[in-house]
Amino acid sequence: MHNDLAIIGASGHGKVVADVAEATTKYDEVVFFDIKADDKKFFPYEVFNDEEFQKIPKYKEDYEFIVAIGNNEIRQRITEQLTMDGFQIATLIHPTATIGSRVKIGAGSVVVANAAINCDTIIGKGAIINTGATVDHDCKIGDYVHISPGVNLAGTVRIGNLSWCGIGATIINNIEICELCLIGAGSTVIRDIIEAGTYFGTPAIRVR
Image 1 (cartoon, one colour):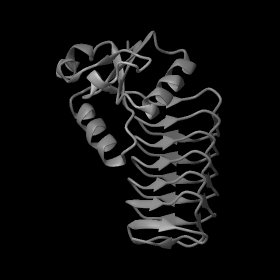
Image 2 (tube, rainbow, N blue to C red):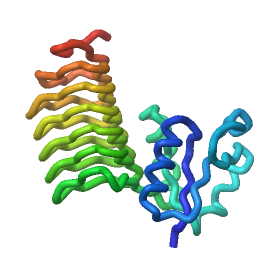
Image 3 (tube, rainbow, N blue to C red):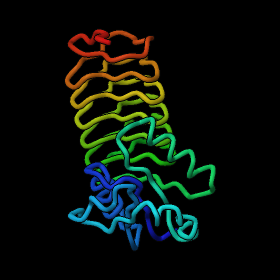
């Protein structure tokens, strides 16, 4: 039985993840691990340092783990290592989020306050559906994707692994975005994106 939660990454996003965890009322205790724990003296939670991190196996029986690191590749690497080592990976959904019927959400994903995910959508592993984002029906969001605050995805959107939609971006219906893409803040995607890179503007174009 896992009644406690360990969060990897003591950052601003980590605090948001802790808020989500506490709002679920599922956990008796929430703790953090961060390799820079010594710099976190004013962080509002207990943060264990790198030396304690090496002793993580002792937490395996009582704790679920979640990686609260914004960088998609780092979040993937740590989550997959924890999974390979047999740790229980949490999935967190804020109680104010709206989750439609037949929605599937992968292990290690976080759905933050006031987000909405509509029916028949699939969210992959280790994804972030951030504050107030909307994901409409029949979308497929890949592993370790970050959907930033205020992003709006219309129906039947596909987003590939490790992509990031910046704050306030809009994706119209029936669009496919390949893996490893960054969609800039406030951008509007109206055509499929088939090449990895950074896209910005309305309509969004590749800038690098």
